[in-house]
Length: 265
Image (cartoon, rainbow, N blue to C red; front, top):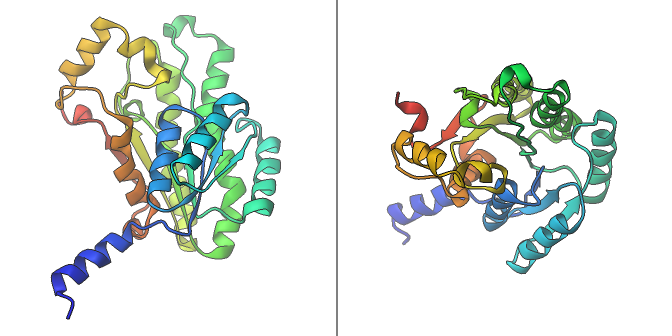
């Protein structure tokens, strides 16, 4: 007879199993998005990689497929509401309704607040905040009709903290916190859980200017209780939790994966 301990362990593990589920990860041709897509695939999900097209997207799709994942690709402009609607309609037609949506597409621009260009503000807000609204709005009706779904918005420690030269980025990620809560309020009745995963400082292509700067590198290490930058694979456990049945009664939350940075002064 199977021991109760073994049965309980097996039952707990099944809560995190994503076998047979379909995930769309926006902005997943490189960096954190690619790592998140790889993590979902490792838990059994089929993954739709999204990007601007071109070599980076195809290379990531090939690498993921070679590692044993089931992978598809799509390309549409997440900052254009009409393009999102068309892209999502094609996705639904080709692959069915995703079980998991990860709104990861993002951009960073840096300048002193008084010198920040209006066009750069518009780009940051459109890419980091409006895109999550557009893509989620386009997919949510199909998820609601099915009666289930997981939406995970990717934030940042700048969701709750500010730093010089990136005020618009902080505004976009702070806004994403409240968009997450608002979406949760509207969608929970349809068994759609909406949460946010906010990384701390991770050494990615997007912030190469930071980890490549010895002064800033020292600041991050000294400011973070873990005394180091994060590794992208360290986001996967929290992602799988939020994407799986393990979080079936969790919605509207912002989970910070930051080595303790936001817990200290």
